[in-house]
Length: 178
Image (tube, rainbow, N blue to C red):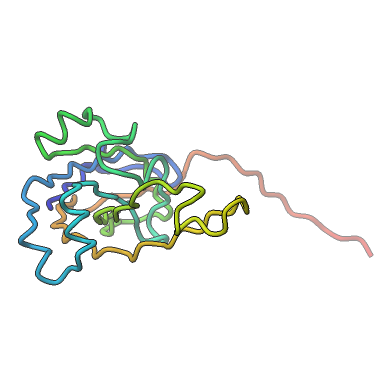
């Protein structure tokens, strides 16, 4: 997969939101790339084609806001409708980053992609996976996590984060009488 991060501006003030957009191209993904090292669950998930995303970053550089995790194509965060995106294989994710320190920032948010494991059929009261009948407590076994999809990232070179300078302060000397 290929993910290109686009930033709405090249510089900003510490604490001021900056709009970001990931253009994610997954049309190059194929079963052949992953199934050699993946289990049968991965193969089933690939057939399903449901991909989870998570946007993360260095906590010292950025604070992220907006929808930073979900499923490609089904979220309100993706700007293309599911059918159009599924046919083109390109998804757009929009989110907000807030610079947390001043200076030239060279670390940017990144996106991790993973196939969503098949949850299987819905649980019913009489199914063997649902626990004791009548207890009301359904215990589903958690599916093992699937391997991450390799993502080739394209990012801006840097972001110039400026100190907040538009504030007023008053300083005066104080004496303490004893």
